[in-house]
Length: 446
Image 1: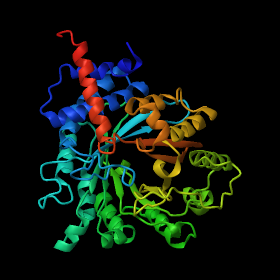
Image 2: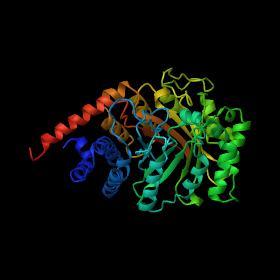
Image 3: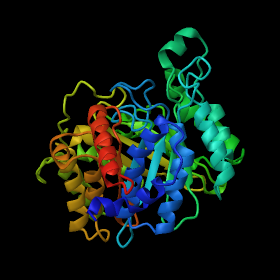
Image 4: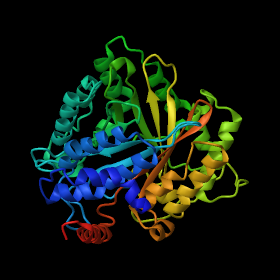
């Protein structure tokens, strides 16, 4: 048995007996099922958890990924991995974990339905809400009350034809987190009102109103107010611009956090460090700052003596995101009862690394140098199961972002990557056809 067969042993066993409703679902299962199976195998998930989540993926997610691609251009472009994605309505993440812990994985899904992109559902809300309702019915511990209240405040306000034509599109995403020791799937929702006038009101008006509605009128807004003050008065904070995304946890309100996203055009390390520490309001140990610089410079392929105050070069590529042209973003993790938020930074691989393999090696080598995790190179096994090694070494595309945060005296790293159903349309079509031929040859009924 090859190593690839070992990675897919559970997926192949389930696939022999699982019903497939149509060619669209067959395509998404053949494409994404092996990706998820490899991730769980490499992250050493218990067998029962691998089976459980593959079944959830097959019956809850696959039917909601829409039609299979027929060209390299999506019929409806999803916001999954916005700025780095290709319109595929699903993406993945691999959270490496802190020292002594194994990784765990998450999926990001924008459900697509029969009404998606039509005048009946221009912001693609119906399919997402239907998935959330189903998850609330099926999964233990899910509490959707926060989402229903936030969604009413952050829904795109498409009040006239001109606004609809310009700003119709994705407004909701769902994060599905599968921890190996859990008995459920934790859910996060991401809301994007799209209309600039609404985005401008988020921090100072809309999010405070939504928090009072969701948590109660007496909720403490200290953490949110700290973000507002930092962005208004700090030299580095004032350079941040909200692109419009806000996220919440779908759990008990007392445990739920609000995530407020911002982007920056400043790529100097001093600026990144200032945002991560809220301009000194939330200091980090010097050793941790040095590690962050080490990782950032490794991703960029820079010598460690490169001046921390200098702007770093960003590839000038035509596909650069209009809202985040330099591929550098952050979010503030806001929780009532906390005086200050936590901060997480995101680095767009397409703008900050020479190739997917160079980026992966930079992170894996960093983790190995600092004694992190039982087997950091398991992540490269996942990537090599998604695209050929030569492609990893010469292109950027399968990896979208790396995120970093300070946690328990360590750098907490998460990798985000995508199936590229459209960017690799021709290659995937050939790979799936070849896989079908191989399986037919192996069939005992041949």
